[in-house]
Image (cartoon, rainbow, N blue to C red):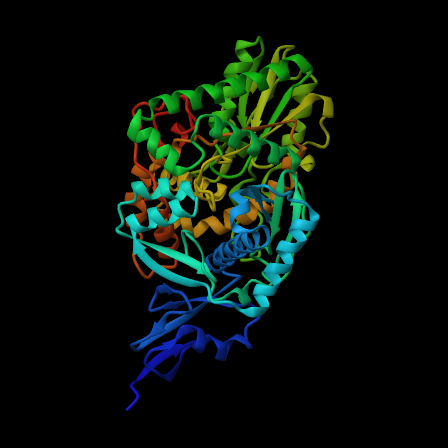
Length: 554
């Protein structure tokens, strides 16, 4: 007699034969949902659709509109692209395919081999991908021992993965494949190629773009928006990584295990100091700059950057005054609400733009102005006798998320402003096909800082992160290309250092909470890194803003 199990879905209990796949179950519900069900949660545990239900359980659906589901879609699309590239070019012709970083909603790849990545080539790749989508080819998964995985990747010429797994403590590795093409990805995959219906492929610079939907509209392909300035910063960072032979986590681990990380640390810190000096020199040379406007997303290191830039400006003959634009927050009771009825501290309307403009115009006119200071405990803007008058050599170094928004400083003369965009654009990838998203690095920074300075748990930081990200998408990223200069605050060694602080905080998130899966993903990600101590990190380092011990008031 066939064994039956009870599965609770959307509050309804239903009988199914034991051993039924989750893929079969979700087919019954898919037509009633606007977004594709790409994974499920079985009793709070994330599961791929090829897995089977063998006991009574509660199922929740994970769609491509969910954060985890969207990441799964992107990973699966990357595997599909790589399979198509090797099919079109021929396995022997491809020397190496590298996923570098995101460009808007797309991912930038370069393909090395004896062929040209042009419109004809990308057209063939896209056609092959669409063919596999229609065939709904299974994305297979198998588990092998770590030593076997190293040998497999050596044979495939994927030497970054071979190097990476030499430092893994786990005994087994999951390998995904489409029609025999094998690869490793950190994270789950779609059940078959038929899920990856929305994408585009076209040549860009020296490689190609895999354009994908955004999470907010998973069935709509947004237009490609090139970002030449930020692209060049990322390319420069990658070039530096190749020069130092630290392009991947495996290479970083080899440096740490071999010669130690102190030399890597000193070179990176020296490089950032040189970049700060170059920016300060340009400001001095251009002259007549009174407002240095610094903007960047959360945990990019804006505060430390503003202080270090001020020191460089002072060394070159100016009198800088760092000012946090958060001091111009409206009183908390006047803060506007977002669409969920919560106070929206990310929007421009949370800033008293009128008062900011009035004060800046008076300073520009040579008047003596009392600057405010926002009391985050009381939620009130206060005045504590902080008076300032701008002389010929004085400049204001203003940092805040709206620094590049023209609406904030429209009344100030353009020639008096110098705009700087700062972000932590990591040049380090896990391996050639697994990138480290910039947002992951910033989230780990913030988890460590929030726990240390605000008493906020890792669970609380992860819970608020989607709201922070929405604010960045609306208020920061649209203006980044308007910057006069860009500064990359990522340090190649920082995740190896942050690991020591972040892991205990992430392990503290209870199983079964909404934030547990994200914590689990981040822990798996941090497991790739050999940890390093923080004693050697300079006290003026941007990293000190997050781990503590900074010589600045941050």
